[in-house]
Amino acid sequence: MARPSGPGPTGAPVAAKNSLEDLAILGGQPAFPEPLHVGRPNVMNRERLLERLNDLLDRRWLTNNGPYVQELERALAARLGVKHCVATCNATLALELVLRAADLNGEVIVPSFTFVATAHALQWLGITPVFCDVDLATHNIDPDLVEALITPRTTAILGVHLWGRPCDVKALADIARRHRLTLLFDAAHALGCSLSGRMVGGFGEAEVFSLHATKFVNAFEGGAVTTNDDRLAARVRAMRNFGFAGEDTVVSVGTNAKMSEASAAMGLTSLECMDDVIAINRRNYAHYRRLLGNLVGIRLLPYDERERSNFQHVVVEVDPVAAGLDRDTLRDVLRAENVLARRYFHPGVHRMEPYRSSLARPHLPRTELLTDRVLSLPTGTAAGPWEIEAVYSILRVALAGASEVKGRASRAAPPANDGGGSPP
Image (cartoon, rainbow, N blue to C red; front, side, top):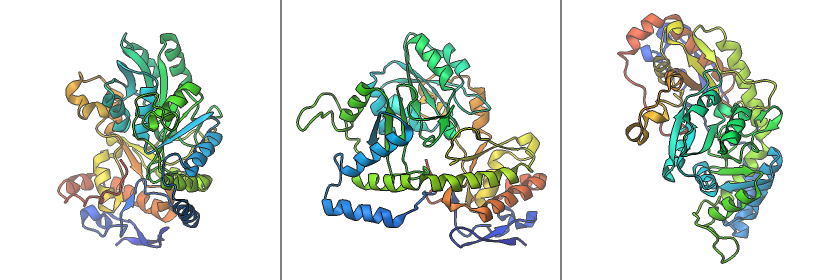
């Protein structure tokens, strides 16, 4: 029988696994009575948030560049060391605004190993994403492969700081400069991260952050554009509000991408707790690192301890030969235990629509290898030592009995879905 481990952060009992018979996928009881999500929202100082929400309701200034939006923009710009921050209702629209404000067209080189919104923002504006393979060690776009993809139609490179680990900015900037291309970064994962001691936020012409509910700092739903380019910032700011520059002067085409005051209130409250959440994330990552180092065939993606990081992602690669089980089988084992581990970014954007049908399939062997091996494990304020040790025990038992798990798990009923609580 499963040995009780102890209470988790919510006080719910957590059960470790000691034998194959304990595994839920083989008939045992789930280790977790409720789903343990990847990216469960962090809600820290509820009292301060409610103070701000009551204040904005009393003022009846609910949107249209209110005082909380302006305060959030100043706070983010100061923390990231940039001249301009423009808050938006979500990161996808933030990226679309930057692409439009930078007058991009034609083709933009982008990794396929990313969330689909990175490519969708390009396609939505009629720009063709040209998918580039990634570096196997970093999971980021490989500068050595970018140059071969440049054509007369290329107008920009769009890098993604995956898992908060910055791209090779120097190499990409050199390529962009030599070919006179715009350089932009999707920094959705990278708030609070640094490269060579410099905070992510001021690289390239602009960077885009996500403040989605599943990010470690969230605004319920939100995004932000950061840049040191005065002209680009002014254009993004106008386009965010239908192209208005003043009360009744429209200077460009625009859309409605404004962040609400309620979102900004959450963003500010979350930002104030940012260092506390990073400390929790770092503790969790260190605990996973101590435990997972004992498992053959499981590689925990490391963070550069010399740099600042938010540690919000705990990502492992599963080597099916060394481990004896493939990633998808381990995912099914975990999900049967109510551990809703995630396959990022399966199956790769280039194998999703509309790109699979509209583009010649690119040769991306590293991306396709990673999409079959990567698994993201729960962390954040929803996880603590008990949860992490229970997750480890599930993996340890499953890997120790890999041959039996492989044969029996394939006949087990699939786990219930996660109720829509997991992040995109």
